[in-house]
Image (tube, rainbow, N blue to C red; front, top):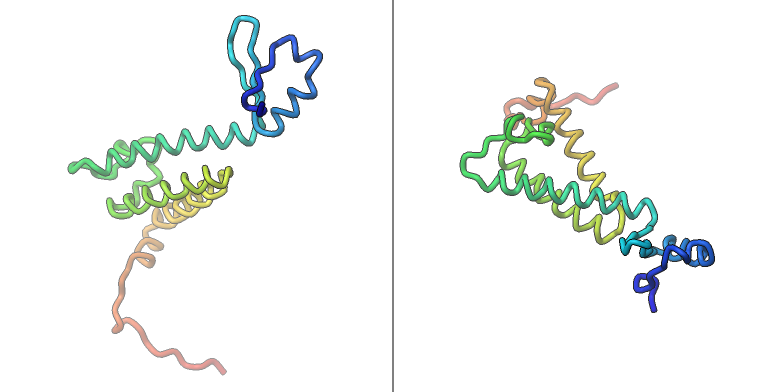
Amino acid sequence: MTSSELIFQSTDLAQRRTEFLDAARSGMARLRDKDGTSLVMLPERQLHLLEELRKWSSVHMRLERMLGRADFRPTVQNLGDLAWLRVFDGEDLKEFAGELNEALVAADSDNSTAPLDDCLRAWRTTAQQLEDPLRRSVLLDKGSSADLIDAERPE
């Protein structure tokens, strides 16, 4: 019997607490309460991962639905809690949605929020830079070869 199949009873907590805690440390420990309620104990980092995957999966699905509408325009009102994405156009938002999806798959596969955290940090940083009009013009200006001049070698 694997630890995920083993179900402890509330009375086991007194006599088999070490076994219960070992099962929880190794991934998950199930406990059946006196009233029949099933409880689960797991490492906090695992709970944090599950919460983040749930939250950002929901955000991803909502964003995909918005992007699929022909009349979608990225406004603060449309984006809601994703308002920090307002500086991006529709194509950028589609790229974000794709990268977010990849980060979610990687986070689940790696059993770590690091890929998700990295993705969100990079997009938030870019959004913050694009908020400044001067930085935005520098970052998005295509320029032309006529704008370039040869630099002289410093002495």
